[in-house]
Structures are given as C-alpha cells and as structure tokens.
Image (cartoon, rainbow, N blue to C red; front, side, top):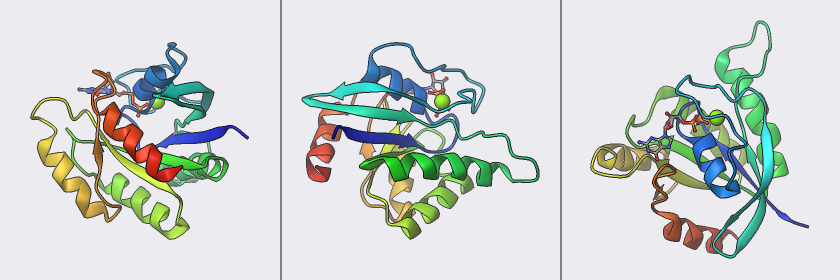
Length: 163
Ligand code: GDP
Ligand code: MG
C-alpha cells in the first residue's frame, strides 16, 4: 500500500503551493483568495526518497447553515482518515489564528498522527509565528518555505520519525 499524506490547515497558509512543490506540476490552483482550491486534489508526490499519494484539502465545501469552520473540518476529516499521517500547516508570517487553534483542538481530540509545519518561514518575518506555533500544544513545528523550498531536509527527518 502506498503511503498517503494529507496537507491540512486553514485557507491561505500555503497548502496548495506546497502540494505543487511535492507533485512537481501545477495541479493545484494557487491564489491569494483564501480557499480558492474548491475541490480536494490528490496526486503522486515525492520528497527525498519518499514517494506518496498527497491530498491537498481546500476546506470550503458547500453546506447551507453550517459555519465555515464546520465545512472546512468536514473535508479535512475525510482526508486525515485516509492518510497515514497529515501535515498540519500554519502560516509563520500570520501567526496563530483562532481557526488554527480550532483545527489543532480537533486534531488533538482525534489523536491523528501529524507533523506541525510552519510555512512561509523564509527570512525573519516568520520567527514570531514559529515561536507562537508551540502554543498549539502539538510539539515543535518544522519550519519550511513552500515557495522557496526551504526546510525540506528537516521535514524529511520528521517523515523518518513517522514512518
Ligand atoms: P492554501 O489556501 O493553503 O492552499 O494556500 P496557497 O497555496 O493558495 O497560498 C496562499 C498564498 O500564500 C499565496 O499567495 C502563496 O503564494 C503564498 N505562499 C505560499 N507559500 C509561501 C511561502 O513559503 N512563503 C511566502 N512568503 N508565501 C507563500
Ligand atoms: Mg489551496
């Protein structure tokens, strides 16, 4: 059975950008508009020697009468149930938001195996958010830059610990 990994987190943290990097094709739509990836996408991706099925979640399913976070969670939950482990992504530049905290709480309750990933950590602008990420209670974040391809060696080490 192939390894399956899901990228989860609130809109605009860089999930699709990282998905594209792992897949190596521009399959996911990347946009400044939060949640622009409407459908879940999956493809084969690789990182170091790892080959896996990668799932990019959008988190904006239509659902009348349900809150945004409830709709996001619905799709996220489907993905993490399928995945061997998840990459829970936060935005080191934006810091930790209430929606990040909400997600973290649900993830902790479900006891899902995951790696906390702090994206947009290139340069100094991400330092504070990286530090804040510890407050989620999910352990030490792995700092990466999906856009610049930084932190990938550290992420591979985190994969080694999961597999
Ligand atoms: P998603 O909603 O989580 O899928 O986020 P996207 O991948 O669509 O990215 C949202 C925005 O963040 C886009 O403008 C990206 O160019 C930007 N972004 C993604 N990764 C990085 C990164 O590593 N550094 C910086 N500075 N911006 C990034
Ligand atoms: Mg996206």
